[in-house]
Image 1 (tube, rainbow, N blue to C red):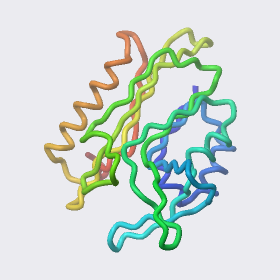
Image 2: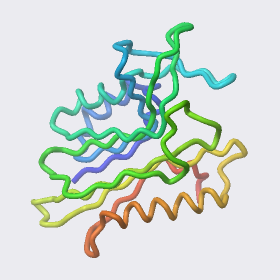
Image 3: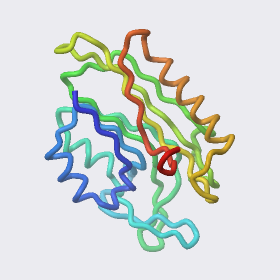
Length: 199
């Protein structure tokens, strides 16, 4: 079973991401920073947060699902805010996505939050809502279940140091994993942890 976990950066490097997925052919793909904007067919919208302005692939979730037709696609939103088409605000969701090849049935799953809760009225102040998703899949060739879990870690504007909020986030992530894992399961946990090397 090939498992890949990546931060999609809102599709900022979409061509490279799509090429990588075509060549790597993951059985389970876990993505963070996924954009889902079902109300538009535009390819790119703009994210604005003060001086922080970034292009976003408006329907990244839909595009990755289309690129992986042999996978079950699950989107786990953390918040709904707005992206911009010029001066027009477009409601858009942001969160995690998990794609599991049909050959590996999902026999249990749990989606939850490791920081705050779903934010329906904007992306919010930093540190923002952060979610996690765990799937328990069965690998028939190996005769065993595998739990694959991922989360998007807190971004702290002060840097990538240990904080009480990050410790609480880790405990919540572990609880989400334990919600689906059975005693003999292999567990693979990943994500964008927002940590410095060596932490």
